[in-house]
Image 1 (cartoon, rainbow, N blue to C red):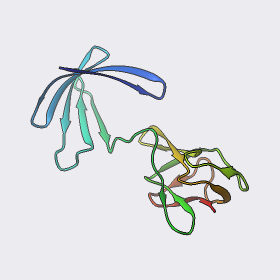
Image 2 (cartoon, rainbow, N blue to C red):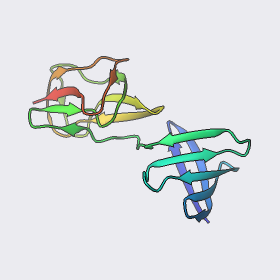
Image 3 (cartoon, helix red, strand yellow):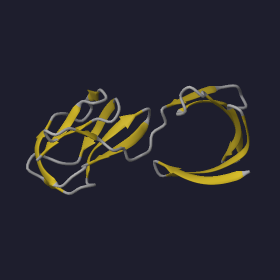
Image 4 (cartoon, rainbow, N blue to C red):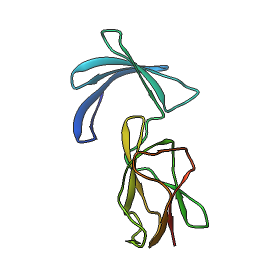
Length: 142
């Protein structure tokens, strides 16, 4: 039996993994038992069966801080599809490596998109509330 503590969007969860057999894990989250069915073809895909037989699916569960994709012309690109919640920089801002540029909501999780380098914001290609695809240019930094 393994015990973990997770904090997601400010809420703390006590998770106990009781048993794992093949692709089924029996876990408790804050004392409530669940069976998690894992798809072996897609390691980040899980379907959770609650005791009351309600189904919840979690696909491609992502960490809170995502590393943005970059290309040589200075673009920070979206690491996954989602909706821009807010932008934390403006054109002309001096940015440090690791500084949050914007927040992207994907699969009901907020993902902080940090800068991968020091520089100056030269262009912002998105607006708050806008949907973006994976690989879309978000911010240009020189």
